[in-house]
Length: 213
Image (cartoon, rainbow, N blue to C red; front, side, top):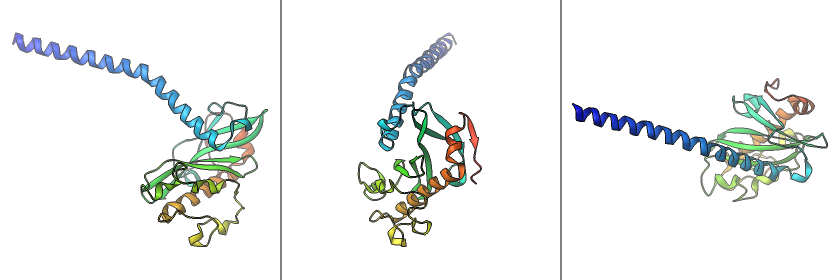
């Protein structure tokens, strides 16, 4: 019995020490992880909105919004707001394409204050390697074709891939992926219009429900 008690005590001590080490490791590594995440997000944003175009802190000048209909998720989405000398320059935010070939595709969409697309990037997806993953800029420049377009350029009926009679090229062998991205980008533009750009730039930080639908 004494031996069992001794073994139990040793195991308990090991568990306490282990838990302490895990907690200490998390406390040390968490700030590093968060800093890396912020750096990655700033890099993504800077690819769409050149740093020389704004002078505020993008990662601090933000707004939380929700709109499942247009953003493709019921979760709160962070809107990053770029300004120059206090004047609105562009907004950037995530939008989800739920109908990719292998599920949801997470996009980062940036829109200039006049409603023109600054650009689009795929930031998370599970599309087929060698086909659908061509939405990544490191593998294909396909997704860069959206820059310069707007809600009415092309006209609404032409916001489709060429295979469906629209304006946008599709990735060979990945039409479903291409369609999903085109639809999600247009929904992002629609969200921007319906939410009122001036209001998006003016609203204070904090969660905000959308009246867009």
